[in-house]
Length: 355
Image (cartoon, rainbow, N blue to C red; front, side, top):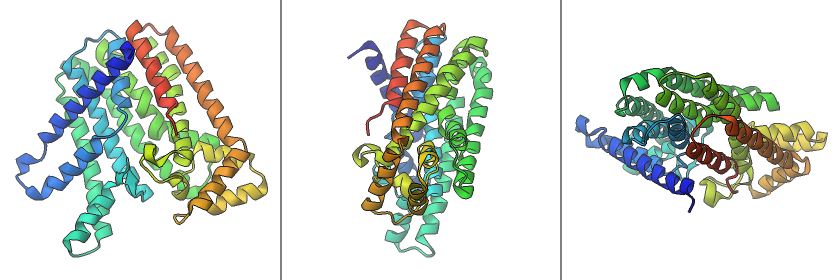
């Protein structure tokens, strides 16, 4: 195992520990056993994930000269709570059944209602409870960040980045809803959604947070690294996610094969497909995309169109291009050699996940 790989294992262990300890301290003060399902749902959701956001934050901190302190792991781990909040709300908006191979939060609470024989609509209860869980996770992310133990001056310097990141995420979620509603689906519009909903808060802003926490103030070279490296890795990361949403192995993705197609996701991959499609192929995509009853044959048909138009190959080429440009930017940045190697490995891992 390389030094960078060993460091990633340690990072994940520290982030996992910080999350467990933080969540275990929540809710008991209320004294209500009825609230335990909220905490159980949060813990189960937080048990999975690639920990990319904490990793980019941590290596930004180390890259700008920050020491290996327990507090930075706690601050970085708070980004997983933000991510979990976004996933819960995203699943409600997309009406997704599964998340990481388990029932999505709203389905989990719906099942509790149904088993208990309570009054009213089980589906409505599930949606309402999931929205509240997502809100709770968002509140916890801010609390964990503020109480991480890092110096107040460092937190104050990075707070504008933290605030901006959360605002970008919410705006990205709205843009995603808007994209599905009006069906514009150009590559440019899909790219805008991908940047604000995923790319920026997955890579660019966590990296910027770590750098700013360590430096105590924004420095020009940091902005160049975050936009030149972080933005490009973020776009490539989302392109890879688009491909996995159509061609991914359910055992790896935790969602049924072709689920993005059933949900009608207007991704960059779909935009490239429509731009290159013949009239007949375009009609097929528009007819099948977003059909919640789409069967395996329908998924196979859409996959065939995506491949035949060259959209899959083109998106793979784009991923390689963005990654290459990002690594060139990273090579020029005055970060520590250890952080440069770790950030390069993270970029490759984020953009080359197997289907």
